[in-house]
Structures are given as C-alpha cells and as structure tokens.
Amino acid sequence: MTKETTSLSCPTCKKPIEWSDRFPFRPFCCERCKLIDLGEWASEAHRIPGEPAFDDVLSGELEQPGTRH
Image 1 (cartoon, rainbow, N blue to C red):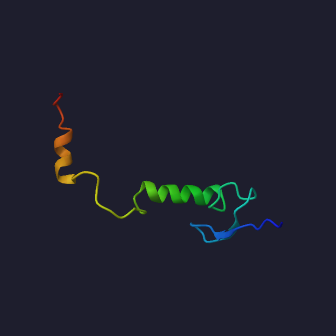
Image 2: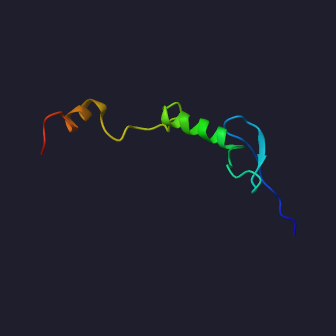
C-alpha cells in the first residue's frame, strides 16, 4: 500500500507544502507565517462572523471603576 502525502498551500504566503513532518508548522510553511497569522487574529484582521457574545453598549455597566460587589 502506498501512502500519499496531502498537499496544500500555506494560508499566509500560499507557498505549496505537504502535510508531513518536513513542515512542523503545518498548515503553515514556517514559523514566520504562523506568527503573521496569529498577529492577524490578535489585531482582529481575521474574524469569525456572528453575533457578539455580549452587547457592547451594556459592557460598560459590567465593570464600573470604583464599584465593588
């Protein structure tokens, strides 16, 4: 039985890579591309569509300075 290797493109730079131990940062081609992607999520350049978990208008009421419960 032959084992086929799955090929894909790096989500950041689109460089073709294979899903194997040769690419330990898969699905990224390298650590740099992995960190670029992480930075985009952290800066909210990437977002998952949907409704917010809480209403931003009311979020100020959750933690008002100087009040303790």
